[in-house]
Length: 480
Image (tube, rainbow, N blue to C red; front, side, top):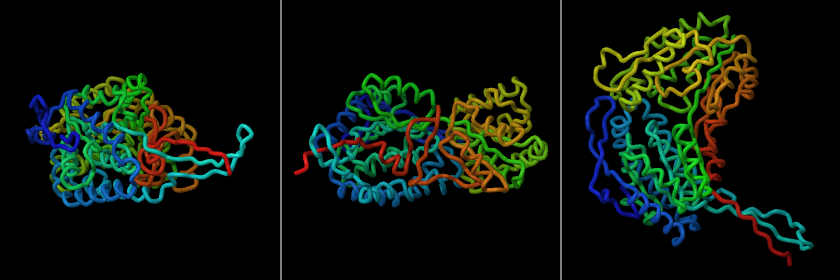
């Protein structure tokens, strides 16, 4: 772990296992921290923020981020191998959001903003209490940030958090998911060995105990918790953080819908349904509901069956595989439980639904397609986080929008039409934080990402994401 500038083991000497989800074999071990180490890391981050010039020295921060960028680039291929092993993500996915995409811009974009962002803005003179005042709005870092990261896209989420947290002048305690700790400890080692980032500015604390991470929510020394994960945990963070009026950024779950309108190019649009097979559907923004017009429903289902039957899945080391295992035996059991519930509630299991016979080792579930689904069913309302697509019929555009919005979530979505104008009109009515229009992908370090409703609070990336790690101070003084 990285605590107060030192690479350390847990005081107790305890370690926990890191397991390869594709082989179920032990990869190695990592330090298993207790609340003792977490509290020490929090204290170090507090001290670094309060007693160094990290929060005010813009040029130094930018140089440190550039150093970290160079260090990560030098170990890109080691990171790639590590992610395939501990995340179980297919090798092809590392060329996109698992590794190469965030490595390209997650640090570079916020480092660029250090020079471009309006840290101070002068307003027109104004009268107050009979005095004419000069007025200024100033942006300052929040302070100590607790960053809690999930296991599905761990490097991507970590780097997008660190880039903006550090560029804005905050210090951080990073708690990676116990399922995928090594990418975070690698970052910690590179911070310690290859950058001038002062001790305490970045801390990485690994633990198999989720309650160790909860110290970040409870501690009055932590000013903001930046969390990506399930809605249930996000709700707990809000509840526990209320005692210290904790600011939160929460990027949570989703049950996103793809709307295929009746004038769409059906074979092309239906390929979006294969998104649930990309990294085995383990993504919060995956579009897991597909809405088809009744007039083309039977035709669409046949195309989807053929596509799902042809999905290349299995060993994530293979370059042609788009779908690897689920992260753990527990997650596989959870997904299989949802499939059983879908059958019990009357949906038609059109394809898949079980453990593949040809893959006896590894936490795999077959690409699974449900048809004849009513939007009120559990499999249409709850986040499954597995390779399961539910197909729902609709009558017209209004009905499609109603069904898409009939969810507690609002993270992502998609719409296909032969008319861009029609697609955009529908996209504007769907209450989600992002919409893929005719196959577009709203993703990038400069683009805000987050959700409506139970899908979260705040935004990752873009200037909106940058500003959520800042406080606002208003200044006024009498005009001479």
